[in-house]
Amino acid sequence: MVLRGPSDTSLLLDADDVPPVLEHNPAGRSPFLLTSDHYGRAIPGLLGDLGLPEGELTRHIAWDIGISGVAEALSRQLGAHLIAQRYSRLVIDCNRPPSAPSSIPRLSEATLIPGNEGLTRQAAEARRRAIFDPYHRRIGEAIDARLRENIPTVLVSLHSFTPVYAGVARPWHIGTLYHRDTRLPALLLEQLRREPDLVVGDNEPYAVSDATDYTIPVHGENRGLMNTGIEIRQDLIAEEAGQQQWADRLARIFGEIETALRAQG
Ligand SMILES: [Zn+2]
Image 1 (cartoon, rainbow, N blue to C red):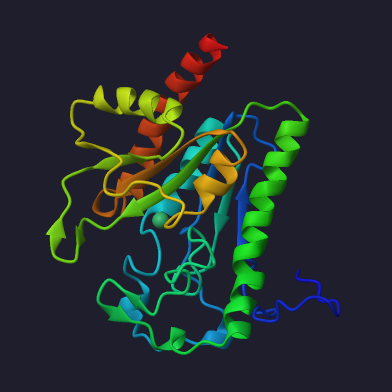
Image 2 (image 1 turned 120 degrees about the vertical axis):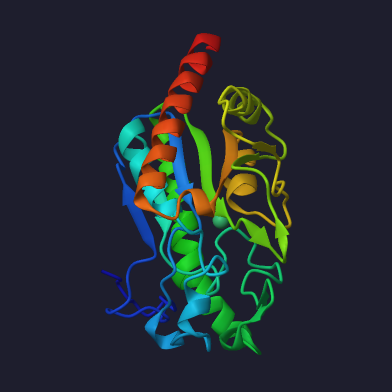
């Protein structure tokens, strides 16, 4: 339920719209705190279809295909808290600073987004207040609570990437993404490279930056938490069987990493 007092200007969502934040296993005591910025592709009823045909709203520009199934299975297997965001990144990208031009994209890959043309400042602000703010507030609160209770916390930001972007095929099956924290990515890369069937990207297909990312810089780096981003190629996790296989693999690897981190103290 969304409570609306006089000071609540988040009028973008009404009773027919899903809440932006979805959580699994909030009492999970695994050190890994899982986030999924591009989990869903919902659009607030008020925004219609953003002027796009269904075919555009189901492809990678709208969300991270396949990551929802991986994230949920991984949360279950690790006993880890998952905080996910249900609205399309075309409405507002929850992994961009709201000041970035790509926060509410007018163009994604080669697709113009008519519903994002000529937005007023108020309209952009309404998307932020209704979707971006509650999601990031919840991650912040969850981290606060864990720190208060002295629960070790490692932030893992889960994403998926399209196998072909702007006509260029990407060879990696999975990539680790990082910027200032190289502790966890190094452990993760070491584990992933032991898997004989994988092509592993080291900061591929992207690297984390303050200009193009939000979750890792704000919740991981600024708070001094160990962190990594993970990107899995979408053709590998488009179906449930692949999602489960990748969750199994990552659960095993994160189990090894947890053992290594605890041994280091
Ligand atoms: Zn993503």
